[in-house]
Image (cartoon, rainbow, N blue to C red):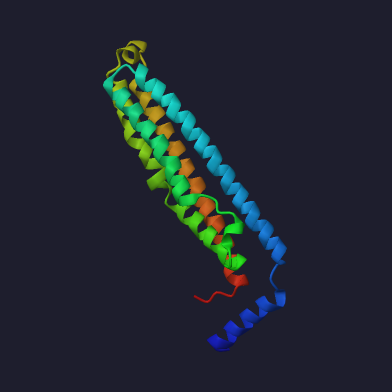
Length: 194
């Protein structure tokens, strides 16, 4: 069997199986849109709450390191939702216009997948400088020193923060892998041979 005959047999098997009903694809696209829209709204609200909390904390912080760290965290709480909106806003199916629904859905899946893969750069790293300044300020805060919090406890807290960051990164990679499977399914249905 040559490569062309194998390719033709594979494409024929897809045609025999048939595409899912168009209404099912549209419902899937609408569900995808709603899920990502809800995710973004939760992130926007969390960013706003975090910005308010760290603004208040910045004015009552004991050292300049804490104050600058809080200011940098507020900037990160503004930057992250802005990037989320710019990079990963959910686009409703109605915006597809004359684009075939499969191509539109595939484009949205690829765009969201790219954002999940790059989450470290625009979602996690913006928080590192502010947190680093706050941790540096903890060593200069007389109240923390007077409380007798041991160094190992501070390092344990820092390790916990990095573990949460690693968990968030891992969740995004799993989500990107799931999106890749859906992209592959669309490619099979539309018989992309690129």
